Length: 214
Image (cartoon, rainbow, N blue to C red; front, side, top):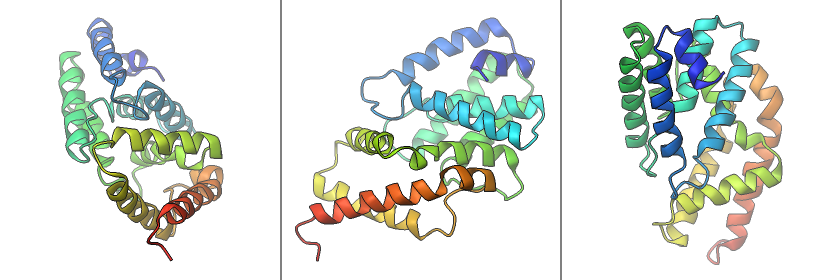
């Protein structure tokens, strides 16, 4: 679902939504972005929309998921936590400007904030749609996964190779230690197996590149 359709479905002003979309596009095209760009937002909107339909969400609920998908990384400066909170604030401001109802604004804001920890109540199907879609790249083809991993590395270029390796290895181990990478059975069926292969492959490459690893 497009941004414009989602805002309109929530009763928002389409003209104000169009202005917000121009700002959103500009932000996602910032030159420092190598993965968290408009392609990523569009992929999350697509995959979360498919999951939302599969979960039987209402038209309004699907619109909320779409809003969060489009805006969850609208502010991105490689500052985990701060970026998501700033993106949630952008979402609130723009939906307020478009005169969307407060209850819907709050719900969309909550969904964006859920991407900080990638956690939410187990029965929250809206959050499950968004969070599983945000991790869909982990279960992509090896080529697409490598492009993602390289892109994220470029976004965190302020860190030395040694510091990045240590941090990335810790993240990969933490992900692989989870009993489930995805919240829903549908997402697990689609992406879990390949995601574990991709994560394990990257971990092995980091180990092989580490002169201190035995």
